[in-house]
Image (cartoon, rainbow, N blue to C red; front, top):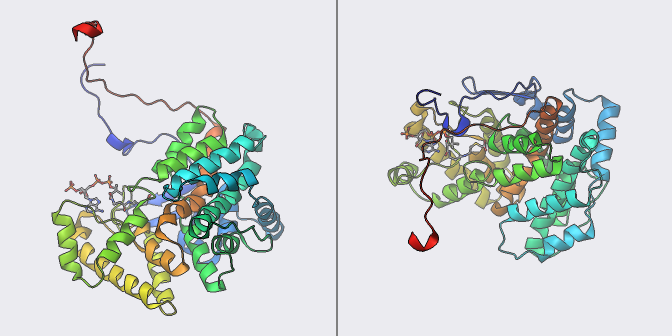
Length: 378
Ligand code: CMC
């Protein structure tokens, strides 16, 4: 090749496949799962129905949804070996490491893991078990106890039950369920792409999901909501304008702001903000304090960054909402993972339909022909 090729760091603007799963309209601030507007899904659907949509491309009828919900419920149990592994991990371990190891181990024990023809039922198993694993990690860290799943509860109600050892009120379950739905899918984000790269080698669906989990862990992706909440709570009682000026002038980013695709308000953040406003009414004073600080920081940040196209993303208000739901900050990213599992599985299966090994090219800028010197003469 003559001359230096165009380098697209971060693969920005590179199309690598066609997909029907998700449209992110970054200019208009719109998001669609299989053509359905996220606003309609958040208002009228639920996580189980949306997971079905993501795996099948169509909304289910009554029987299809009942069968799907039953299948999810039947997969909730965790083998004792998985629970023992979670219990054996030191308390200070990042829960994303534990989640990744547990899902890999579940794959190791699944005789169907390598059978591509079973990927749809394996996806249901993954969506179900990842929620049980996250609940188990949270509850074992907090109380050293594991709560067995309740097959009568919905996916989200059961997750909160397993996490807390007791059922949560309907309105809390509804809010958590909407959060899971809003996080369920987001096109070729870093974790999904990482899962696709893994499956493109004809590895297996568990390994692809484990790659996605490990990629989600970083603060520029799934870890942003925990970092955003930390930043919000750090601003309690402070003047938001001065607080934000301090962060920006010290060269730091405002966590929960900015997005590679959205150059306007992330539609998921709009919905979460409304949910947070509604929840404040019956929340305790700590959640109110966090929410009001978040609104102040949001306004102060937009004044400074809005013109550059840096607006709140999904993660800015997630922390305050999860605080209301009763989820600890260290569990935010694992909760993001259980929410994103349907999207990962959907993309992995779509890619396999027309698989091609992903193997991009780097532009080599090093030397060639360097003389090899024996170790004693270097
Ligand atoms: N705070 C302050 N400045 C920012 C921010 C921010 N949050 N985000 C971008 N910028 C600035 C950045 O400093 C740069 O400025 P300049 O041109 O003067 O050097 C400019 O905007 C472009 O930044 P970039 O890093 O090239 O843009 P990107 O498209 O790679 O950024 C991002 C995407 C998400 C990595 C970035 O906005 C960021 O770091 N945000 C904070 C972390 C965060 O909230 N992540 C969650 C993303 S949404 C959830 C998900 O999809 O996982």
